Length: 355
Image 1: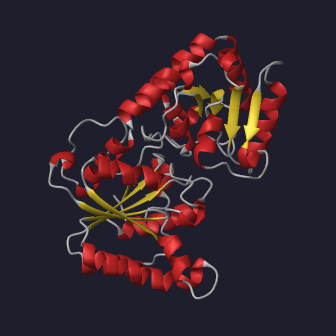
Image 2 (image 1 turned 90 degrees about the horizontal axis):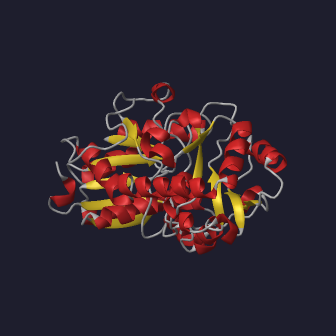
């Protein structure tokens, strides 16, 4: 089934669009998929579950409005009769809602996606696996089949969702075009310092060469998360950036990284990835791999001394991420996997169910 050229589908995206914070996280996965589906020519509505629960709650807090939110959502399903319901982090939603969706929209296909790390966010991933069993297919940003096999509740219900997804309308930078000397920093890390990341950042600060300008920002430095344009403007001030695992002493699962990897690749920053994740399979020289913090410090220093090589590898990552995992192509793959009627082209990542 060549979804992109068939009749337009009616698609309802049920996720957190974060109106409460004025959609300052417009680069999150649900937003990228939403826009990718529109670029394919489909009719797409967004239903923000958490915002609606808060708005309908008689008392402060979303938990008081969950029932009313689901009623409003099912009313939307009734009038829109979607061909596809795409669900994000729907932890407020029980099996009775899945059944009600199918009753109100006969023939609907339901997909659930997850961006959590199965080795770290175990409760969230277990919730995802339960809901993937109720959906037609679940999609997760990890291809670690063994780890997923431990939690799957219905065999054949979990497939891969590329973590390297970029939105060309959002990630517009080209850091590789700029000499490191003309940037504010040689390296930058934005993110949390939780669990094992703080130790990795401390090691980098003390072992990078003298003169290496390494900036640590966001919650890891101040406890305040950067958002919206400020987030991308800050990322683009650094020549390179590591995608740090929560604990570099524990091998990352295949093809797993936080969505930061797509943001970095998309703006043309030299992007370092944990070697066990094997991103070089997807990105070739565009993935600059490291085994642990010692190896990472050496790799960052190497590219600091050879700016032409830094720019070359950053451009490869930028180009391949845009060619292989732009949001519209990932959205098309998701629909083709969901309808299970064949693929319109070869995709560079695993396309068969992982568990």
